[in-house]
Amino acid sequence: ADRNRSHWSTSKTPSYTKSVSWQHHLTTLLSGNAFAHEAGEFFIRAGSATVRPTEGAGGTLGSLGGFDVSNNTQLGLTFTYMATDNIGVELLAATPFRHKIGTAATGDIATVHHLPPTLMAQWYFGDSSSKLRPYVGVGVNYTTFFDEGFNDNGKETGLSDLSLKDSWGAAGQVGMDYLINRDWLINMSVWYMDIDTTAKYKSNGAVLPQARYSDSVRLDPWVFMFSAGYRF
Image (cartoon, rainbow, N blue to C red; front, top):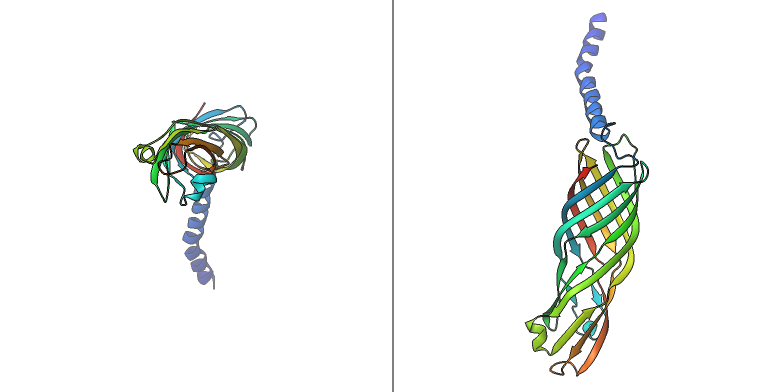
């Protein structure tokens, strides 16, 4: 009986050791006392930011059907200050986004550039010993449009003098930081932005009746960012 008990105990030891080892590795992966976000820290992230509009339009543009605004990817930057171990304030910036605008009836007719600086208040889950920090945020977006204009196709239909009104709207965010070491981190984040504007333009009567038009336009994009960050 003693030999059986000894054999049973010995045969279970490797499995128990592996379990303890995996628990240790998981704990090490998710915690790191020297690496965490803490009150007073400042960090910057840089990476690819992709804007994917969920577009719509009213007025004449909407009546043409199939209103479309293309996706675009640019360099995205975020600047974050940790007010406490769990509360952060973040500013989103980027190089100018460029979108093609079109309808089912006309194809692509215009190009527009915009910048969407967004200020967020964030809540980081976990604590100051966590290397993995999921977070959520709410805030306000300001979008300014510039260099908007009709392309050759739009001009052939008699359209000119395109302008888009700047926009203010709410924004929401979810994201996650993983701290590689004391200075560096990697990040994934997603925003949803309320961007509504008014498109004004003229027609010389070639296709649309001669007039000045003013149509409501909804962009309301999802923004996806993958980045690396450095903490100061």
